[in-house]
Image 1 (tube, one colour):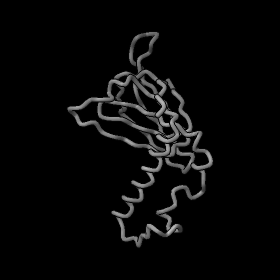
Image 2: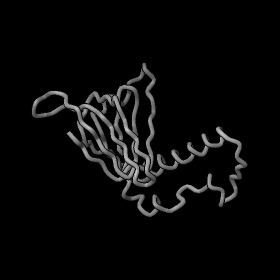
Image 3: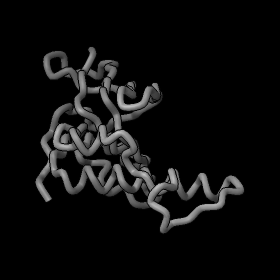
Image 4: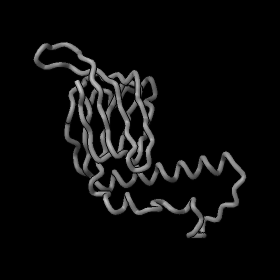
Length: 154
């Protein structure tokens, strides 16, 4: 696995608000956070915009285990195997929840069953090398956002 690259130093990050704007392959996520302004040595409010989002995942820390919270900020991970695993896990979780919620005659061996079609239009498969994992550790856990890019707005 390739090591991540530190993008934003928001050491003890809090994410008081996260906006998810679903729009197919053009989905966006906006994260409100605070970071240290290295020039003034104080915390400032920032927005981090993620474009062309394919998946989001949140793993909570047990409250007596803060491992990862000290990771210093927002990281970018370009390891395609890691990115692929998060996107596929997201698809599988959505299928699992859908089947738990309703009465659907699901056939796992039927290739034409929509619940077996991971990337119907082939959008992700055609461009998967353009997707990166953006990882933000916070006290409560870790956010993983799979997107094509990000922009920091101060």
